[in-house]
Image (cartoon, rainbow, N blue to C red; front, side):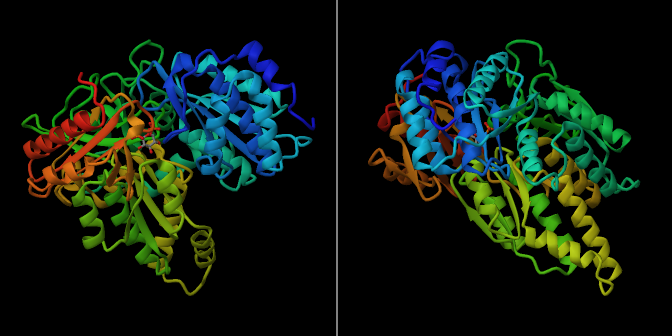
Length: 543
Ligand code: G16
């Protein structure tokens, strides 16, 4: 095939016509909206992913159908680039244009992309497809497959998988299996065997090998069962919220987003005082920990806590190896001020702050030899450069390395295998946290005691058009509407340790408000005052 003329438009008009005129944008994590508005978008993304593959020398591209933490009626689609990273930014614009054009203009827009990107249509593109457990995901996945077939792409449909599994498979395929085999079995085996080797046989200190798991009634609750089987008694995982066949329960009053934003335990998990509990989100790319103490008080250990726990530990291991490595941590404006201070002042690890979105954090993290990134909402991972991996391989066989250096290097090599470097992976992250707590001999309270979080509050404001809110300085300053930032600065001044910012969500039709202050009461008050500013100045809709 040398042209797309009269090829895609006809299929689109017949099988996946655009039935509405709402504009949709490639946001923080792809397209997300109510599932019934997405059929034509997903078909077109199937087509685009073949073009992306051709552009990338026919390497495999990933296409994931999910709306992750969003409510069950929503769905979404995102494209994964060859090394498991998010779609290149300039292609996000192409995706948005393609998603919104009328059916009869489709071939013209596609031909334009082919020409400008110098794509050779005589070659064959390759796409891996995955989906979450939403009721709408099956038919949307079929739309994607039709789109891929329209440009004669080769496809592998993985069916229901977690988002991080699909990223992993894409990377495996494009590294000729150097990263592992692109199968679910190989993914479970690689991570669980690293976990078991790191764990050894001894139970240490106050650490107890038992957790209570909240699967958000999504795919995480399916895959965690495979991990539980693979690791056996090394960690007892009590699995809750695993009703994937029940309509209306996905992410409902449970899951990582609920626990983080509501700051309370999920429904469906029995409260056991001081027990270590884990919540993941609908596609298992985020994880948070929590516990309820003997006085029934809820304690959250979110992405910031995970970042500080693993950064401190990995830094120690790296020091013991004697390898020269530059290690850095990446956060967003949502990171608790105390976590940033702890990392930079106590751990002496440089911290970078970037705009919300895994794509932004990942891009920054890979600038370090070892880049640790976590969003406060629990989305994150650790990246290791080829330079570090090569050094490690070399030094592991260097006869002059000391016994303790060798043992630290072996540990680092196993940690690399335990971590899904391609993207935040709730299940691999959970096993990493368990590994560090076990190695330290800590229970959840000892982990929490490393520093005290500043009380904080995250709110959502529904506005007429969230796009009126624009920000700069890694989302920390609002540049539009005019006057909003000055008003925020005025109220922030009134609170001890006050900090607040607003930004438009890229996954939900809301503006998010974050505030922290010296007490919970003050953080709540500040958040509500800022919410009022948004309602008054950015067209809020009172709920
Ligand atoms: C996605 C992104 C995250 C982001 C989150 C919320 O998470 O992958 O990086 O933090 O959305 O984004 P926003 O505040 O723009 O709505 P997930 O877990 O929903 O895929």
